[in-house]
Image 1 (spheres, rainbow over the protein chains, first blue to last red):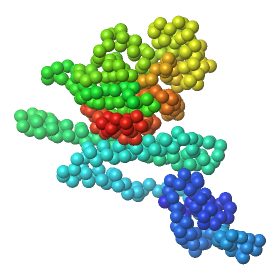
Image 2 (image 1 turned 30 degrees about the horizontal axis):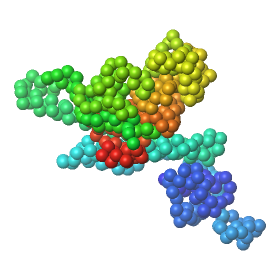
Image 3 (image 1 turned 90 degrees about the vertical axis):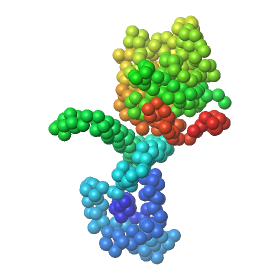
Image 4 (image 1 turned 60 degrees about the vertical axis):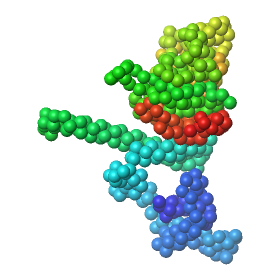
Length: 208
Length: 240
């Protein structure tokens, strides 16, 4: 996940310190991907090193680079601004799909002998359905439904994204199950054909 | 606490001998007051069979189906039809409204068939239409309404007269995503208000509105997800 770009984008709104950035990030994404504050500060210092943010030196705010409460406040630089606008105008790369543990697990379940693939699929489907029920319950609670509050809307969209992903996973599992059933039937038919008269059926099948 | 719908050891076969088909194999299934249960499964898994048996539209080959504690199997044809009209509401994919009747008349019909006076039935129909948020469309004919509005009328017809079991077969199948969601919100609200709902669907996002999701394969319940309702927890042998 691009914590770096997300923090830069938040700083476009105005100077902030670490805790504020974390709070803003979590409010907009519904704390779906919690950030720890250490991660925020590490990222900020990297951004500073690369010249994308700078500490705010304002005599009106305490001792120079901290505000009255002693927080180090950062603002985005020109270079940082162009980085943000590039992030928004460039699609998230899909050339290297993120490692998908479920797809890998199924690929191995199908090929490793002795694994009950049907059970693997059903357990996952139940678990994903339970997650989808949870997301739907959140939607029903009305959170993220206020279209006029942009922060609420942002969280509502993140929630929709989780709903769509869970739904897609269940559809994919249904599809895998159907394909595996077809493959099983085909295998059984073949075996039955082999046991009876081999030639006519086999010859036709191969000829196609 | 009793289940509004209790199916015990229910099976349904078609044909015999070499052509015997098991549509349902000895399943036990319950829906309690206040819960919405979704039934999912590929075509041929038995989910529509389950719904038609639950509604008394078909007779099981084995086992019992009880609605509000009454075993449908011991009722004669007439009493069963009466129970169907008074206790069970259906919602179908294609709405099944009578085109020559207005929304209010469609909703009032089952009550009138039950012998309620036309006037009382009309009043009940208005209430039911108000419950689903379309009392202003009472005098429209089905072809003067959108799909979502027609399905609302169908839901009003399903709930008119305080029926406590609502059976819905792919109720969102003919609707766009957003309208479908409104319909589910409505079904959900009826269950929250105390009805027991059974929703057959192949759409995971719609099943997710349910308290429990039951997965059917080849006529058997293979799995269930979601929390058991409070009522069901009082009958541990039935939950899971």
